[in-house]
Length: 98
Image (cartoon, rainbow, N blue to C red; front, top):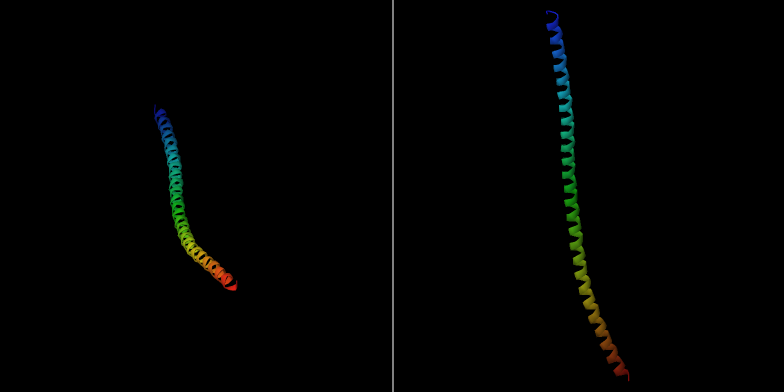
């Protein structure tokens, strides 16, 4: 019986070592998965920040385009006025030359 107890303790010790190794490996795997998730979340934050910056740039471009369109509308109105004036002057000149 004296020989059976140390043998039983050795098997128990090996069993505990195996379970402990398994738990450590599981914990390591969980830590790796958690780290990947944190890094992924960090990358998502970066992507959201970049998207926000791009939106601001697009908004500025749109505002600049609207301003340009307003200016072109004013220029078009002025050109129409001058065309009408030149047409009137042309008519007056033709009338005087007759």
